[in-house]
Amino acid sequence: MNVKLPLKASNKPIIWSLFAAGGTVTALLFPALILLFALAVPFGLLPAELFSYDRIQGMLDNTFIKLIVFALLFLSIWHAAHRMRITAHDFGIRADGFIAFLFYSIALLATILLVIALF
Amino acid sequence: MKLTNGNYVRPPARYSWWLRQGRYFRYMMRELSSLFVGIFSIIMICGLYQLSQGEAQFTAFTSSLWNNFWWLSVITFLFVTYHSYSWFIVTPKAMPLRFSGKKVAPWIIIGAHMILWLICSIFIWFIFTNGGAQ
Amino acid sequence: MSDVKTSQKSVRQVEIEILRYNPDTDEKPYFQTYQVPCQEEWVILDAVNYIKDNLDRSLSYRWSCHMAVCGSCGMMVNGEPTLSCHAFVRDMPDKITIEPLENFPIARDLIVDMDGFVEKLSSVKPYINAAEEKTVEQGTYQQLPEQLQLYKQYTQCINCMLCYSACPQMALNDGFVGPAALALAHRYNLDSRDKGREVREDVVASNAGIWECSFVGACSEVCPKHVDPAAAIQQTKIAATGDYFKKFLMPWKNAQKGQAPEGGDQ
Ligand code: SF4
Picture 1 (cartoon, protein in one colour):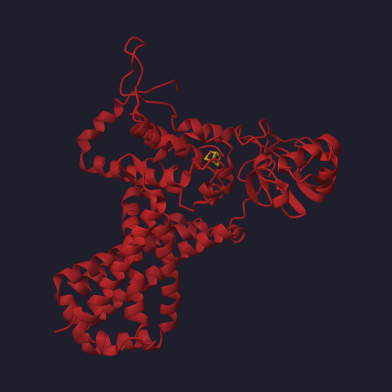
Picture 2 (cartoon, chains in turn orange, red, yellow; picture 1 turned 60 degrees about the vertical axis):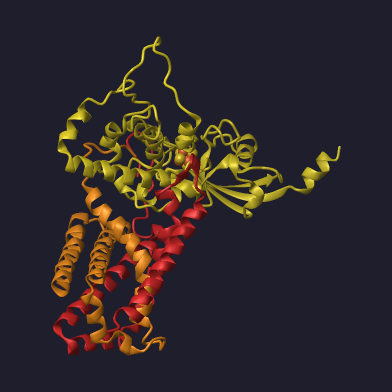
């Protein structure tokens, strides 16, 4: 129960601010995004033409929308990576260094792919 | 574990602690939502990549998402909605507001976030139905 | 008069199972069961006192005020961290399990070793670090009622340690500074007379402090004094993040930290 010395200053604020910002934008936008983009068509709520190549491409021609998409996915992927690191710890997995490396690497690769795809 | 000073340390339930109480279980489900946030983010990034590759690739992507993976989207939707709910419900704790010296009631902060959530959802709906019109 | 009659009527036989441990004779704790005739108006502590007075004088536990002020009678009651003076037997099932507070070493029976907890409390420098010491002639440090309201909630802690028992991160990492100590640090950080936030951050924002918290929120749910340690910790995370980036972007400000005054003995 005692504090374990030595105490180290933590660099968590960097990843934590991404986590917090990501959690907020994800909470605000993801449910609607999933409902409309991934579920509305298979459940027959919206016509598939709404999500055709031309329309989505046209949407992303708008720089404002493109930046929103970039910010949303960038933050959500880092939010998920960081929270999954903590969840692995909660499930009793103690290889925190390896887990952190693994999840943050995936997030980094996804970020690179996102930049390639969008810009 | 008996310590040298006679104290006894109960071994913690390292893997199963979260099954012991409802509040721990709800917490774990909240945290597990991140797995689905991650999966859906990667799906969307892959979709954008396919979009950049041309029409045939993008159509293959959407039809696979809709026809083969709709069940994953259902689970993802449930977890992500729980994430939103659990995120907004604790906002008064992280961001207590004061207005002319008085504490703003928690339900007002939560309610404001819920309304913002609704506005953002309508915004996405608006973009999908009108934004791409060309 | 009719008192005897009413109390007889409302007596309920309850089976109470208590985790026993005697460091001199026992290798391991074990459960012992008692049949207790509980009165309608009894709290758990009354039932435990009944056992001590009438059934088993060897039972050891801490208590003092019987009115949720002293903070010493915390126990696990049916798996929930509870002040035993603050929970009625009538709200419980016919079989009650009582264990010493979780996440603490057991010293004897229901008594836990709280040395680590006290060390953690003092590690956050829980006293006013004023910008400058005032002499008696210079008068007192003044504070407006509105400034008091900012942190009053966080002064209500009675050090009952229930939050430490409820916290799963505490169980997973017993070096974690923990809810009550971090709430106490927040209490001083919010105090208008205090200037010691950066000094406290050496512990509070370290690898044993706020970042070990994953916002389970169990501490706030079990706290009998509505201190809401979970809120304190999240607000501290936001403040510490701001400080971190400030330091990062304005490194010349770091020099000031060394001059931060120390209030009280180390
Ligand atoms: S914060 Fe609440 S639960 Fe924790 S020790 Fe203080 S009074 Fe007890």
